Figure 1 (cartoon, one colour):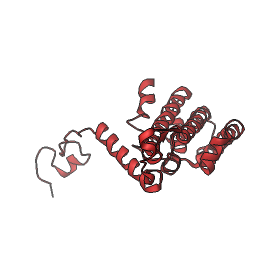
Figure 2 (figure 1 turned 180 degrees about the vertical axis):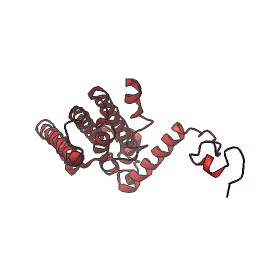
Figure 3 (figure 1 turned 45 degrees about the horizontal axis):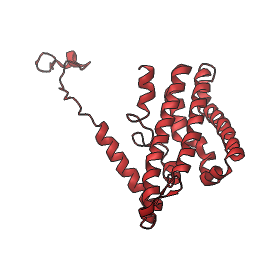
Length: 223
């Protein structure tokens, strides 16, 4: 794949939340308002980018038998640094994200990209993949949070919307509303990206045992 394809696949085609269905727990938890969603998306993107780069650079050094523990240690180090920065410069965001900020360590998106991509590709490609997946994750959070905050709280980014502020649907900020919006967005993405699979004709010609069973030329099995 080209560099552009590696980057763009994480936005829609292989969106980690709406297509691969990864990171569902933080997605539902922090998407009640846009500010928290953007904060979680930015933090996850930084960790994804840094961990992909380092893991790709060390892929020939890390022993295969202990690669998963090594990945977790590296990811945990970057998450700790991000958490300390957020605590220092954005305490309100740190309070809003709560336990879900340190839990980025066990986010399936980050560990999955380390194992499936960074472990097998160059540093540049891994950095692009991490950036694309991080932005895709952030976009999914942003869409969910926008819908849930506008309908559930009657506001957007904390700014009150005149009509909706007095006629909000409070269930949209609760778990049922999160699952509803999540399901609708998945259905929309599946509809947009759905491609008809080409019809495949099955026959004996491609079978490695075709000559043995005698059916490659339409003959009968020899006894």
